[in-house]
Length: 168
Image 1 (cartoon, rainbow, N blue to C red):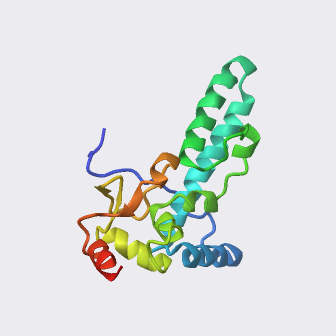
Image 2: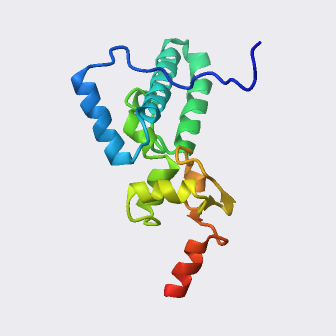
């Protein structure tokens, strides 16, 4: 069993910690997406790795079993926004870290223009000014689904919204 308060890790770190090309790529991603530490990259890498692994497993299954499980996996990833509507199992094998990082709440707040920089987007989220459908979300790493994307906005009770309305 185990203590329910001590959760398992959602990520696995790099096998070779001092690879120069990997370190440079991680630093570029940290700057582009305004990440706090490399653990956030490793979480996204682990998610992408698990999706690709599941796609390879499905390719090995017999056709009768594979069809229904493939449709369920593709439907779930389309609803999360990782892949497009007409994607196939082969498209799942090309999922990368940037596709997952683009679905983070922090990135979507910046892309919608609610913050002037990716770092300000993180601060607005952590300070509780951003909500999804009127519900406060304080985790910048929250993965926003396609259905929730239009609902991301500054909360009505936030002083920032009141200041924006007064400025207009």
